[in-house]
Image 1 (cartoon, rainbow, N blue to C red):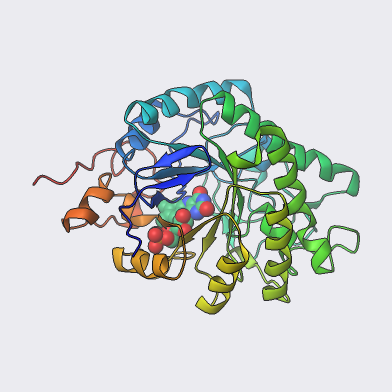
Image 2: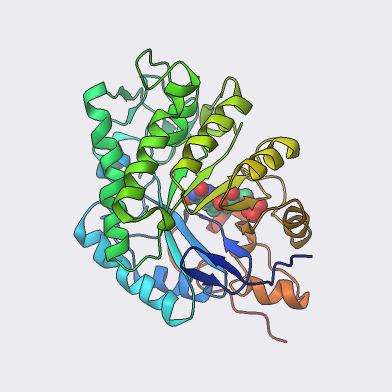
Length: 355
Ligand SMILES: Cc1cc2nc3c(=O)[nH]c(=O)nc-3n(C[C@H](O)[C@H](O)[C@H](O)COP(=O)(O)O)c2cc1C
């Protein structure tokens, strides 16, 4: 039986185990969106993961979501990532950049722009701003002529990521950000080729993935998806058919992997697994279930056919998670207070387990 500690070949990357550090926003970049020395330390401490997926990174200034988020929107931001990728590689790890365009999950006070989205439908929940949580503004609906520019923003950021030494990129198509806004029938009320039917709603995701794969190679591009996930006001009509069609189109692109959150019934997730020809990452904790994904969750999903297992919260306080799982050492739990507070406390001050 496959174990979390078996190695795995992910495209050109040899992973020493099947444990993936899931993407987690930590809001520790400079206000200019530059990665910092502390971020290099944080990721390098976790380099024994089979694969690290970074926190969400904005591909364009327009796509910024929260204060303290890092970018790949300029060459200066790309250069700031170089010490991070170097530090992870020096510790024997592998790291891909999660490209997260906020769409309507943003605010003028963060980005300097009114958020753009498929339609002028406001997020029903508050967003982070430098002066605290605020009601999300009504976004500006993208015109048909603007959509290729948004697709291009993923391509440009992906090229910068490769230049900065990342091993690949993951498009953030989950959790209610721009790509899932297009998939949604609540956030997307368009009547043109990018809305309405299933074919219309998946078009933006497929175009972004295809263009990114063309630019840096499909074997270096993955995509994160949360089928049926409802955070950030998302409703997806005809959800099983929507994801069936999306997976079929993405499979034609020969993308490296899908990174799927357990946001749907296991039967549907297993059907998606069977329909997907390449690597299937499963994050058991979905969109933050009451308790973090466990070793047993991971083993169960490996037995159901997942290739790799994503762990989010367990990685916050346990940089040596792989070794703790292997030896049965206790896991340190980390409270919400330090998730997004900035600074080194609750970030790089968790030691490995002393045996
Ligand atoms: C502090 C924090 C920040 C997160 N930021 C992101 C993010 O930037 N991108 C993303 O796709 N998911 C993000 N997530 C979701 C996690 O990747 C993961 O799906 C979730 O925590 C459930 O898995 P777990 O039970 O293993 O923690 C975040 C989760 C946490 C706790």
